[in-house]
Image (cartoon, rainbow, N blue to C red; front, side):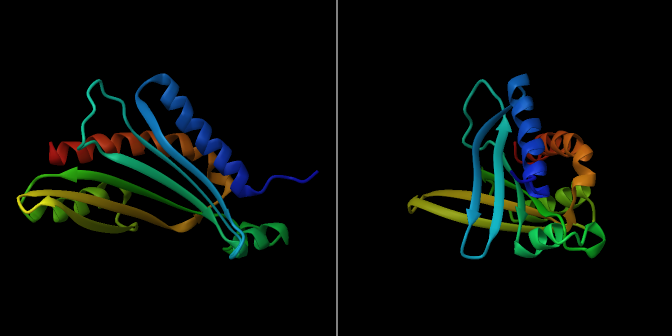
Length: 180
């Protein structure tokens, strides 16, 4: 028998909180992924959610939370280097995906500042826009925004995960308010 890693412990807690919120009825889990990459010895877990609504809206904001640990993170933990080494723990990031039909360019700036206000100035924000043309006059714009926390999360912060998910759900409403 072996002890679960910090990644496993944090994944189980994060997943449990999200599924509890789904059972409460405010959100809907739309996807999840739990991967082990044996080529580079990494673990990644992600869970995707959106606000539950009575009407399916193609413009819904879908949020995904990622948790990842690489070989260095696992080795630091297993070799008892501990949290003080700066290597034991997991990377955390959140992403948002949604379609928009606005033609003005200021929405990227608004989204960037909104995400910085929501998550803090010390978070890295990346925004990517894709355009899909089904015919020359029908354009779909999809936005994907990533918030990269830029530091390792450790088991000592597991108690903060409930607040993290609450804030994530709140942020979906804020982003929806920008584009609706």
